[in-house]
Length: 107
Length: 120
Image 1 (cartoon, each protein chain N blue to C red):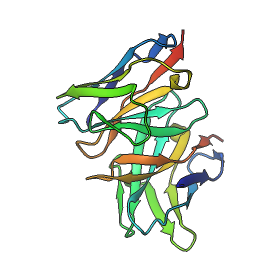
Image 2 (image 1 turned 120 degrees about the horizontal axis):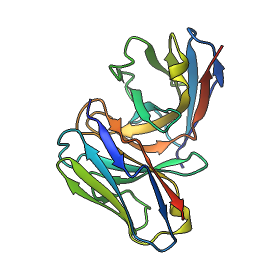
Image 3 (image 1 turned 90 degrees about the vertical axis):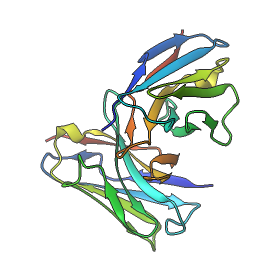
Image 4 (image 1 turned 30 degrees about the horizontal axis):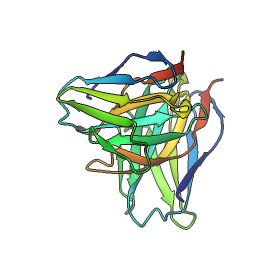
């Protein structure tokens, strides 16, 4: 299975700040990388698919980039509702696997 | 609006079977897409467990293949997870999700999750 490593595991940040979360795959995944957000109430929703494509309804302050084994999720200016857990997930190889999560918390 | 809702026992004894139901509203599970189970362990690790397709075929994570079964009841628009011979390591929050993609590996709608503890 492809191992996905996220960093940092915890990210304290302030409202309005620009933040970046990293995700590294144990082998190349050819941009087959998705991002999900989990709110404190447990709700999970997709944010980005295929590295950089925003899911319908996701605000434009979210963006994704990367290639090969290294990918990132950037939030350009943090809003209160952005403080949550974030997961990357690869769908290049079966079975799909997830990163360990990054908790974005208010500084 | 598509909604998924998990239900089932919150406590299961070791060596027994874990059985969960996912009830889907706003979309008919035979119309298209596939229907997955995913779990999140204490400590935040997430694992895709398997799916049942809109036609009824299944595909499972090889790590679980001998213990897992996903079935459905199309009359109730529900699909089910059964995990046999559970241990404490199966303690997790279990999510059902709608999925699609080459290996049915992009998840666009999720349930709220149900926490299951395996303990005697």
